[in-house]
Every structure is written in structure tokens, then in C-alpha cells.
Image (cartoon, rainbow, N blue to C red; front, side):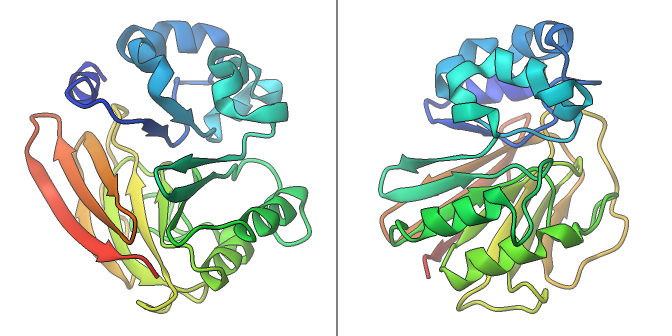
Length: 240
């Protein structure tokens, strides 16, 4: 964690946090002991999202009390913001998110306001080659995002880095309407090996590091840097 924090200190960007931030249970003590010493100095830059470990505490109180208003309104764990010309949706996969849920309807309403380029984050990966694999209950919201032109999805949960080619809700390669997925569970916890290679996986790395996204008006660029600052994955793509 100290090494990834040193890497973040090299940049001045906003920092998207993808959940499971203070082991083992996301308590107030865990945040003070495990998260704050290395990452607390970046508080003004955080855009956090919760993971399943945060909900080991009833209502994820440790998480919401630590991040306060940065964690979004009403302690729902989901919210939207603008990053330059981009719309960014921070979702919560530890509360109901499938079709018919309050969060699903909120996503639909947010996408009616979408800009040309849109990114989403949610803790659990819809697909993946790591230990946890796929998350079937995210299919409805993945389909909704794809039908509305969302470009990129960022995830945590699996302790590895993986880039998956744009795919639709049936996990079929779809460069025209599919979401490109990045799993970035590389902040400091013990790493996971590949469990099985999912069909559209392009890069899988078992190392700690940081994904840096550059969001431009009509395209996005990415670099995954390991804790030594070496770029292990790099690319760019146009928005839908």
C-alpha cells in the first residue's frame, strides 16, 4: 500500500476507489489502521465506491463515516459526477442493482443525461479471469449501460489487473456497443492468479499498481503502472 500511495503522489488526478478499501471488515478501526496511514493524504481527490467488505459492517457505516460526502448522497453508495466532458457513474454492487431495483432505475435516469463519453465503476466484475470470475446479477445493468453507449467499466474485487475487450451482456465481443472492462484490484492486498481465461480477456497481470485513465472529449487512453512506475499495459480507444 505504501508503494501504490507513492505512485499516486506522482500525479494530481482524481482517484477512483473500487471497493474493499480497509481489510478485513471495513470497520472504523480498519480505516484508521489500514487505509488512512498511506492514503488519507489524498482525501480531497477521492471518488470512492464500496465493496463487499465494507458491508461486513451494518450499512457500511465505517466506509460512509470515513468518506463522508465524498461517498455520495443518502448513503446509497452510488452517485454520478463529471470528469471534464465525461459522465462517470459510481455504482454499488453490494445492494440491489438488477432490473426493477431503485439503483437500476437511477442508472436509467442518469443515462438520459449522458454526454458523448461515459464511464462506470462497480466493485464486482461482470466478467473476469480471476478467482471470483463472473457476476451474473450484473447482467441487467451491463445491458442497460451498453444500450446507452457507455464506453468503459472499472472494477475491483479480484486481486489482479485485467483488461477485457468491449463486450455485450451476452459476453460477445462488440466493438460498436460493448463496454471495455478493466479490473484493478491491485492496491495492496495479496494477489490472485488466473483461474480461467475469459473469452475476451486481452491482458492479465498478477502485480500491484495503478491504472491511469486520461479522458479526452472523444476518446480515452489508459496506462497500468506497477509500483516501480513501469508501464505494463497501454492503449487508447474512441468513444462510441
